[in-house]
Image 1: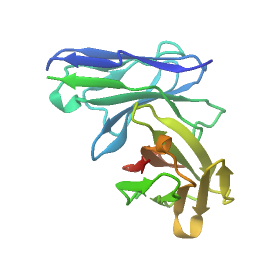
Image 2: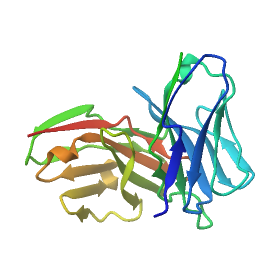
Image 3: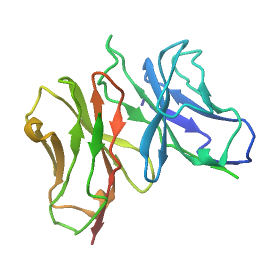
Image 4: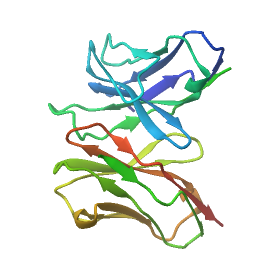
Length: 116
Length: 113
């Protein structure tokens, strides 16, 4: 079955270190997203991509970057991890049928990141 | 402003009770999509339903039903004869034509045996 996988599922890192969370989907979806989930804030969009070489900033993009070199992968990099970036991170994808708006977004299982 | 409000932070019911989760949204767009997701204790986000703004038909899927009313900007979710396995956080989300997917704060449902 096609799916979306994230790794690592759990990670503890130190302040100032660079961290990369991997996301891989096998649905051949053009659209991919990264969200973070925090108590009191729900899910907030970090970055998104509508295709290879396309990346866009979301609501809370400061301190994060993404790159899209192929359809299947959208890694999320924390350039210099901060305690405020302790969160649960969800990768997601949706199919693109010409118009990206409104298509169902399917989520990965989440990556729990703790910055100490 | 574009916003989703789930006023019920936590709901606790006893198994077999019916329960309704409220969702009120705000958008000036005439075209938009609404979603419900379930997040069980294991943490993943499971897609439940997608509805576009031009389709006000209610939907039933097993014990789940959704009531979409544009007049009150609401998209409520009812679970009939709740079960312990329904215990989860439920998120309502809005995707307006002029923006990105916006989530509500979520409602935690606890179903006690």
